[in-house]
Length: 155
Image (cartoon, rainbow, N blue to C red; front, side, top):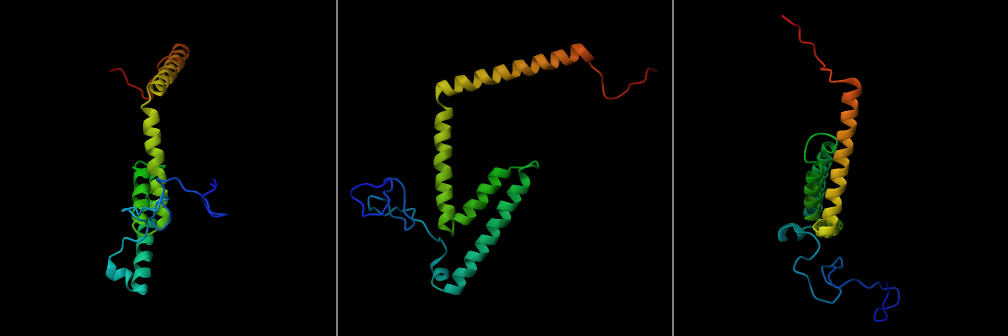
């Protein structure tokens, strides 16, 4: 989306979105600026800062990897994945932008889910699904009966 007030080739940004340097499109600096949150003494030394970033990346990667492993297994897979993303977001702009986008989408979904029409539709679909499952279970039991998977011997 290109508006007339922008230079040719420059893309307009919504006023609530941030550029990579932490400045909103309206020119105001956001307090939650993007970028490294490493201590000043770490940022001041290039080798130390790169080492810090590598450490943050490795720790975040381990947490995200553990979350991916938890997806098919019992455990809070998505929560752990987002925790790993939050670790990355302490140091990397791309992770901060991903987390902001995710937060915006989750908020939109929550607002949509609270809409009375959507709630009614979801409840209706759930009831229909439960009725279908109950009918299928009833037909199965009527056709085959209830057979226990173990034998109890009469004494």
